[in-house]
Image (cartoon, rainbow, N blue to C red; front, side):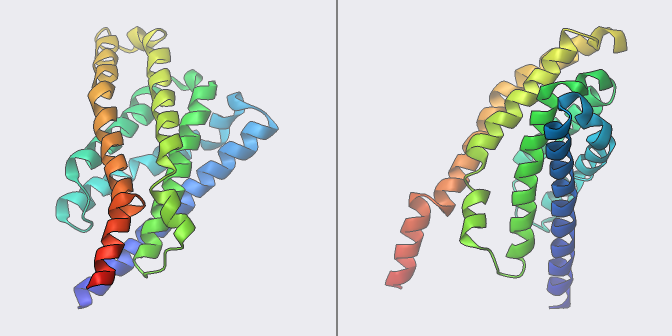
Length: 214
């Protein structure tokens, strides 16, 4: 019982803090973009976004230890791809961050995470408004393609630009990463579509009907 309460308290704290961190990123990106434009966005958010995203390695730890019932493979895929972007593209090639693609990437990431972490924080206390539930399993229909296209664009900008200045093998590594997006994006998007069907689609309706019959 004590262990369960401790776990719940930790998850409320972790998810709430993560939601606040990503909301801060989203607020900074939006305010600076509309006030001054995309080139100024990284000046106020780059380091903070990198640190915030790096802390997402905890997601892998949570999945591995069973703290949350998350699929390990898809969790690792998503976290690894983002870490590659913040440490393998954004950090060594900071001039690329002035691109509108960087702004759209962070907008997609931060909006997704504010929704997701808010949902999981409130789930621990059994209080999830329907609109948040719907957003959790529907917003990705727009945000995922937006995020993926932005990530790919950032990698391509590095590939055709300064990648070979970092190391002779780096362009080849980026090509491999780009190729991995083909099966990777299909797997992740299919997984999210499956989750949506269970939560707000036909699967959810069927489950409600079965519960009523019992």
